[in-house]
Length: 200
Image 1 (tube, rainbow, N blue to C red):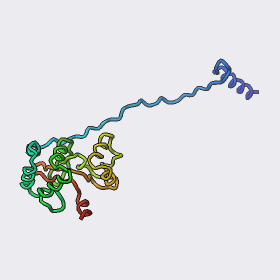
Image 2 (cartoon, helix red, strand yellow; image 1 turned 30 degrees about the horizontal axis):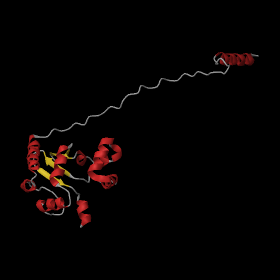
Image 3 (cartoon, rainbow, N blue to C red; image 1 turned 45 degrees about the horizontal axis):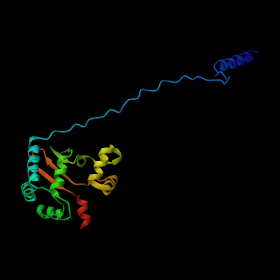
């Protein structure tokens, strides 16, 4: 008898909560959904250029404004251990050959210096490196880890072949330049040692 009364009470409560056509409704209590927030954007701290680096960039830009490959060669020759290629050619010969293939070292260097830079600690020195991608570790260059704008910029710099090399674990394989914090211009290269070895 008691079971019958509980069953009738349950049926009555479902009917009472039903729609006007007699269809029962069930109400469930759930926890409130968490508030939706936008992701926190972490700002990268950019190490400002030292006065010596700033002065070297100004020297390079003066040469670029004059569109003088001869002056760029003289500046590179004045630097200790400056690297323009890994084949052992002189800076002049190497850059002249590049110009004949349609690669203008002056225009490409200007484009690099107009873009963002990164830094790397090498011994007790800070190296300022353009583009910023060339200062990153290989795993941080994976296109899947970059936002849309950086991924597009990286593709423009290294192409699909370069992206494949990055996915294979290589560091940045594109054109790059660097200046040490004391103002020494260290390198301006468009290839890697592996590129030179495989082309020989």
